[in-house]
Image (tube, rainbow, N blue to C red; front, side, top):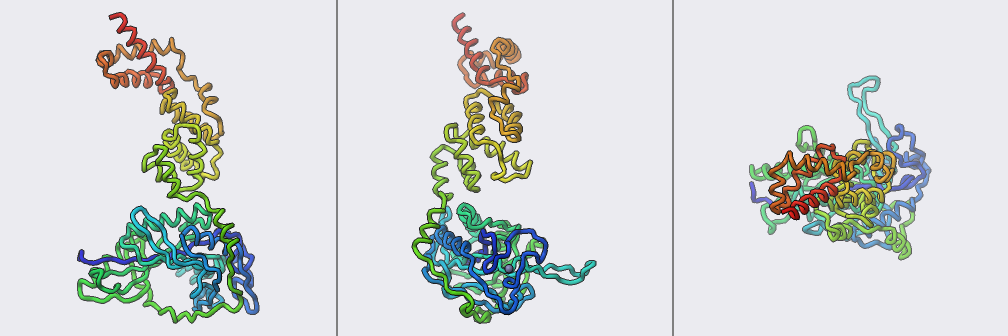
Length: 477
Ligand SMILES: [Zn+2]
């Protein structure tokens, strides 16, 4: 069964970051009580007229630029006709033959994934099922999401493995979040992904019949669903069976895809130009305005962080979130970047995690993190001291120097020298080695002193004392 080649294309729907819906002024706020963000337009009452959301169009242009697409000067909305209980109009306003942007690509580590098109459309509502429950037995409809602006990004079938699909989604999300086009939060429904999967025996054969998988709740599930579907199709074909063009639902609990419905052809939707909306005209001015709003993107930042000497892991963590990366840049401006990266990844993210805060909610001045990094890098304070003072710095936004004053750090050289002598007598063999020129052996004595003072002595001072004592010894000899 190994001689099959998978072909995967993804359709990603992202919610554009607007305050109001695509064609009316209703709020797009997540988590509002059911059917509170609705009006005659988004519930499809007779005689109402939609109006275009300028912001959504601008964000689509910005997305087109980030995705290396051509921005169309002229595009139109189209009606996609179908009936579903969460779509009271019985049609969805989308774009069909003339989308707002097309022909782009997303660059991954090893390859480029082509983008066929990215077009504007409105979301439908949501059905809430209460089957066999009290007091409601049946399904209810919440129309809050009706008319929420979406951008549908359709990739070419350039993806050949579940891992590449995963990397594509992560890269896409990072780009759209950096440019503040979408939050891309799958849990809140601001990113959804449908996967088209087919297999064939060789590249010389035409593409196999594809199935569409829906209903994944995370990127990890997308990867699992694709992997499952590839294996399923291989098995069906190996056993002499046939793949049908159909929509399949991912069942995360069981880890399988199940048939939902055999696919309608595109013509079934009877697309036609939306008569209630004028075409979208995009001029150079809008494109230039949007281009200016795009910050330095992850690929460029990665390069800069590598130049600063960070490890691949550190770069990956810091570049994931634009605001976190900005924080790192601010903190490392005049400080040791590797140490700043350590503090951010271990201590800052640790505190944020404990308190469930986003980087936007962090009050700690990045310059204080830089100051702490330099104290640590120069050996003036130990990792234990960092661990002790960081939560207070984080909580109260205080510079480390101020906290260290209150901490009673053992920095009195006389006191420390006595402790070092004690350390030497407790670790005599290390002392002998150290005297013989084995630099590393000093670590055991320094470690002993640090332990004795529960981390509140300054390792650099201890080291200095130890060196002095050794030199004095040499002189005696
Ligand atoms: Zn509305």
